[in-house]
Amino acid sequence: MADDIETEDDAQTRKRLSPRARMVLLLGVVTVAIAALIWFVDYQTRGKYLAGTDDAYIRADAVTASPKVSGYVDEVFVADNQDVKAGQPLVRIDARDYKAQTAQYQAQIDVAQANADNVRAGIREQEAAIDQSRAQLAANRSDAAFAASQVTRYVPLAENSAAWARQ
Image 1 (cartoon, rainbow, N blue to C red):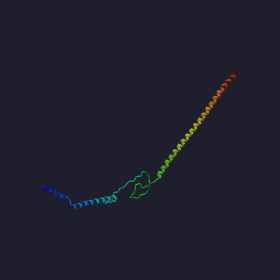
Image 2: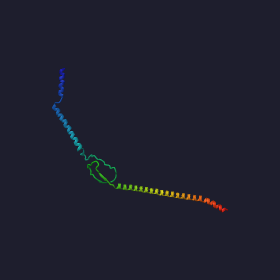
Image 3: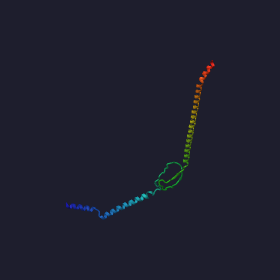
Image 4: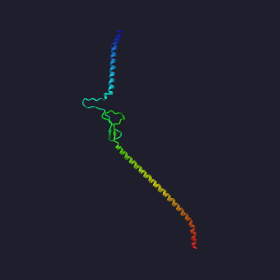
C-alpha cells in the first residue's frame, strides 16, 4: 500500500508544470491581454471611424438633425462630413416668415387694443348719459317741488278769490 501512495505522488508531480513552463505560459497570457487592450483602445479611438469596402459600398453612421422650428434655410455653417460639437449652430433659418407672423400678431394686438379703447369710450359716453339723466331727474324733481309749492300757495288763494267772485 505504501507503494501505491508513492506512485500517486509521483503521478501528481509529473502532472505539474515546471516553474519555467509556468513563467512562459504566464508571460504569454499577459502578452495576449496587453495586445487585446491595445487593439481595443485603437479601435475605440480610430478604428471604428475608418471605412473600408470590397464592393464600393460604405456603411456610414449618419445623424438626422431636426430643428425645433421649421422654415427655409438661409445659411449653412458646416460642410459635409464635418465633425460638430453639441450646441454648435449648423444652419440659420430665414427669419422673414417669423417677422411676418410677428407683424400679423402685433396687428391683431393693436386691433384688440383699439377695440378695448372703443369699448372704454362707449362706457364713458354711457356714464355721461347717466350723469345727464340724473341731472335731468334732479331738475324735474326740483320743478315738481316748485309746482307743488305753487299749488300749495295758490289753492288757498283760489278758494278766497272764488269766494269773492261769488258774492
